[in-house]
Structures are given as C-alpha cells and as structure tokens.
Amino acid sequence: MESLEQEKNKVNKTKSYLMMLLALMLFIFAIDLLTVAMSHLNSAVAESILMATRNPFVSLFIGLLMTALIQSSSTVTASIVAVVASGHLTLEQAVPMVMGANIGTTLTSTLVSLSYIMNKREFKRALSAGMLHDIFNIFTVIILLPLEIYFGFLSKLSISIAHLFIQDDAYSGPIVYNKVFTRPITEWISNTIDIPFLTMILSIFLVFAAIKILSTAVYKAFILNSFHDINKLIFKNPYMAFIYGTFFTAAVQSSTVTTSLVVPLVANKKVSVKKSFPFIIGANIGTTITAAIAAIYKTEAAIALAIVHFLFNFIGALIFLPFPKLRNIPVILAMYMGKKSVKSRFLGFAYILLTFFIIPFLLIYFSND
Image (cartoon, rainbow, N blue to C red):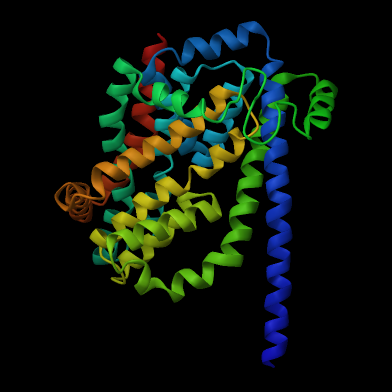
C-alpha cells in the first residue's frame, strides 16, 4: 500500500516538474512577445504611455490599480520590464509603477481575511495579518518615493549595479543576447496578427497564465506539505521567518500565495500577527525573482528595473527587520485596524475599495485632466 502511495507521489512530482518547465518556457515566450508587441506600437500610442507616466504619482497609482485588478504583481512587474525593454517607457517613469504594483499585490491577503467575517475574533486577527502586508508596502513607498522623485535614488543606484552585468554597449544581459531563442516565433505571431495592441493583450494574458501555472506546480511540488510540516520552525525567530518567506515566495513566484497562507494561521491562533511580519517582509523580496527572470535577457534599463524591484523591497526590509521598535509600528497599526473593523465590519470593505480602487482611479482621472 505504501509503495503504491510513494509511486503516486513520484508521478505527481514528475508532472509538477514538467509543468514548471513548460510554464517557465511559456513565461519567457510571453515576455518576448510583449516586448515585440510594444516595439510595434505606433508613435502616438507610445507618446500616450510616456505622457501618462510622466507624473510619478499617476505612475504609482497606475501600477497599484493594474495589480489590484489582475491580482498579480508578478504579471504587472514582468510586463513593465518588457515595456522598458521595448523602449516605450523610461526607467525613471517605471520605478513608481513598480512601487504601486507592490502595494496592489497586498489586496489578495486582505481579501482572504474577509472570508473570516462571520467569526469576530478570527476576523480581527485575519484582517490584521492581511493589512500588515499593505501597511509595510505603503510605509516603504512613503519613505522611498520622495527619494526617487527628488534624487533618483533607486534608478541611479540600480543603473550603477546594472553596469556590472553589462560588458559593453553591444551586450544586452548576463546570459543571452537581445534576440532570444523565441524571437523568430514571437515576430512571426506579431506580424501575423498585425494589431500590436491585440498582441500586447494576448501576451499579458500568457504572462499571467504562465505565472499561475508555475506557482501552482511549485506549490504542489515543494510548498504544500513542507509549509505545514515545518510551521513551528518557520516562525521560531524573525530571521528564520524572513528566510522562509523569501525562499517560499521565490519558489512560487507569488507573494500573494505565500502571504495568503499566513492569514489562516494567524486567524486560527497558530501564529501571532507580530511573528508573521518578518515572513511577509521576506515574501516581498522573494517575489522580485519574476522581474529578474523577465529582465535577464533584455536591455540594461530592463535589468536596472528588476534591480529596482529588489532594492525597493530589500531597503524596506533593512528599515524594519533589524529594529524591533520600528518593526512593531506596522504590527500595532494593523492590529488597531483589525480591532476597529470588527466593531464596524463595513470599515474593512471601505478600506479595500478606497485604497485599491477608488483613490487610485480618482487620482489618475483628475491628474490626466
């Protein structure tokens, strides 16, 4: 009986490995198709993109709104990398958009917490855990966005680091040249469809599908059992939780998956809100691997943007993780919000609608006017 079960597990793991490989190939293909589609857009569309993202606050809220709508910061950041690689978006314009995507991705864990709304105590803990991810990213944006706007802090630092990966002007990345192995197929598809906007929509859908397939395959192969088996070890100390958060999220390429795993644990008192925070910080760093994969065979600006994504989350971790008093501020705020939301459950829904949809949409709309 055991040998049959073991054989079944082996077959399932083999299937997961094949799915991972296929999803990775699909991801590379989709990113290349998006780059080709963007490079074929006419100058009027390109000018519209540049104009829309010239205001850093509009750029920030576009990133936030896009991620909140499609529920995947990995898809949004990978797509932004492709747009930068196509030359239709500058690094400086893309940086606030990536910051916005980091806030937008926190919506999922907050939505997961709403599933506990019928039980007051569980809902209070779950919502606190869900909002903790939001608050951490919002604080990091408040600190780093002004530095980027006034001093170009992240963009200049990332370009300096990107130079280490670029040997000369003719070289486009640390692994392969700009024309990747998928380019003949992607160019043929783009020319066959002959509508760049339609090709762009198709490629974004494929990026999203590839990330979903990849995250599901890795989750089944590596995370599902091990996460629950080593639950106590994961949250033993802040740095251990941080390392596991980074590792698990890098594996599934989705911070929304791993942070959403934490919400039920906090809701059911398996983990405290305070102990879950370092894991969430690690998850933020782990999710940057998607942009790195997307950028690894692109232009220097695209590589620099992937570095920006990492630096944003890494600096956020450096600000909060080593200092317990600073680390407690987001925790206290999240617990306060959880407590208030239990008294008026409408507050939780209002917070989601205002933060992720209404405020970004209104700011984008009025800024364009």
